[in-house]
Length: 212
Image (cartoon, rainbow, N blue to C red; front, side, top):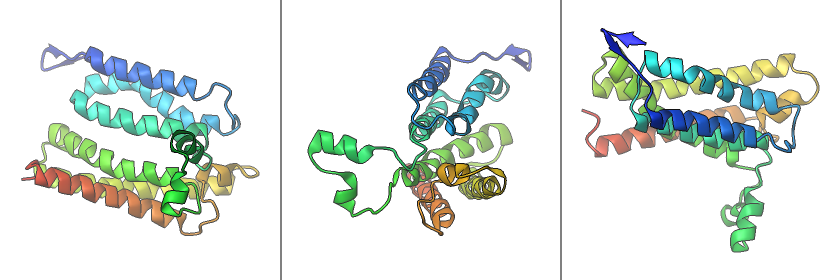
């Protein structure tokens, strides 16, 4: 694709990130323990990877920003394999240290989904801010504030999507996909922790002098 007469190409490092993410999604479906829910979990990631070359040619991003998206989607891909509620991090931790994460922190539920929502705020805010600066011409402070606001907006829209899923999905599909684990305040907590992650990212950027 050409912009102003200059052909825009996707750097090899970004192609590698896209390819490794597709590989991770494929690997996550080997002996998939929840095959009925796998398409809901992994199809968006695969579609985004397939669209990424065109998107990155149309709206180029620094490789560091693409890495942030890559990390978040890897976390999501791992969670998607176990439909989030059953990520066996306690088994992994016990095998390595003899102790469980839940026992250490006194958790009564699987908290992997909280980690991913926190990561969405931490990693998504600088991504949104970079896009706003590079392609929206917005000055840094406003771009970071927009990033903070967009994390809240996207989180809310996602929770609304999960609610709509409960209205149309058959059987227990929605309950398994949403991963509320019996917590009626799960959507509000998910949005709050994403916003907390966004605030941490914003403060970190401010300390480093990136918010002017």
